[in-house]
Amino acid sequence: MDALRVCLYVFAGVTLGTWVMSVLTREYSWVDRIWSIVPVVYVAIFAGAAGFGDARLDVMFALVTLWGIRLTFNFARKGGYARGGEDYRWAVLRERMAPWQFQVFNFFFISLYQNAILLLITLPAYTALENRGSFGVADVVVAAVFAAFLVGETVADQQQWVFHREKHAGRASTRFLQEGLFRWSRHPNFFFEQAQWWAVAAFGVVAGGLQWTVAGAVLLTLLFVGSTKFTESITRSRYPEYADYQRRTSPVVPWPPKREPARS
Image (cartoon, rainbow, N blue to C red):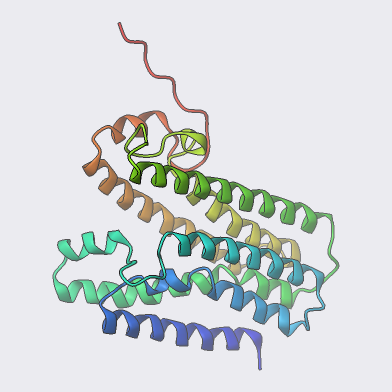
């Protein structure tokens, strides 16, 4: 069976499954729970269609697997797989919407759209499958860039984890993280997460040129833009001093912070 068709069957099953579970349990983070797993399955299907004998596809599969392992570990230690581990933003939205409106949002955005993105971001592997060729210098460069972004996200998540443990213990000096990589970006983990999937898209470009399969990286970036704005609106409502942090710190892309004006 065609690899893309197999992926579409998996997509249909996962979309239906996450939606049904959200309706049955009244928890709406089931897509979050499979976010780090399903893309690995999709890339495995494309690599497997080549008999795991294509170097580019095998490297893509290995890198995406490392991405999945790291993200699964980070999500698990924060309690994401435990009962009651729902994303706090969905509770905020439920308060702002009528029940029927949220259920429409749940099906079309939380379940359908997000699962579509999880498939689309892996489709550069389909481009690589359809345009198999030798593994060259450009592939090595993209792989190294992906690995660097993976390390960056690992560091950012670890800094965030340590901060929240310190905050929970009452030892944090600020109410939200502003040091380390978070001094250079308000959301360095968001930056590195998106950047890794742009690197996956680059593998597709190396294999077959610029094609429609880059759409996944574009849509993921747009999803993060909206998510970041919504998250920051909640944070700013809780912590008024967050506005000062916003003024001096880059939103996503790591960049030297702006200097505070001298006080007279």
